[in-house]
Image (cartoon, rainbow, N blue to C red; front, top):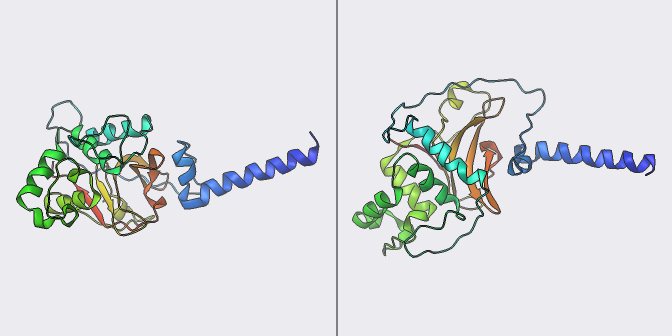
Length: 231
């Protein structure tokens, strides 16, 4: 192959790497499971400030149970598939963003479906996405419904993420649940225990084509909810 051809290939490769690093804070590489730190980035060590409660007595704090369980979606690259299921629960081999939430919470012994079904039944008018007709096969898997439930029973936290601000970054802890409503699409995910070199947390979520772990700053939709389970 001619020298000019190799040079062109080199430039194309370099452009792809630069584009992948810069486009939406590296979302392409994150989807592929490739984590390259941004060059010349100042390192920030964000301390963990979380509950040590272990209600299921497995030796792991509940908030980390949530992270580790939801990360299984990423490890198996659970395909994004939106389907209505009799009984409510999809098979383990498929799901949507809301399935990451109930599956993660289940890892800490928290049955989100049962809790939501009960509250929706007793307070149907508070859940506009239900349309006045509760359906236990799907209600717990809708983002607006999860958002309403979390607003009622979880601890609300800041929805602002500020790069380089230690006090702000400390408010984003593993196991927290993040909601996006009214942007490009309704979405939800779980804050990972993984951070970038400069302290930005990753989010475990599922959107087409499959579940992944992506920097929270890569999302273009506005964050409308940030919650911590009352362990």
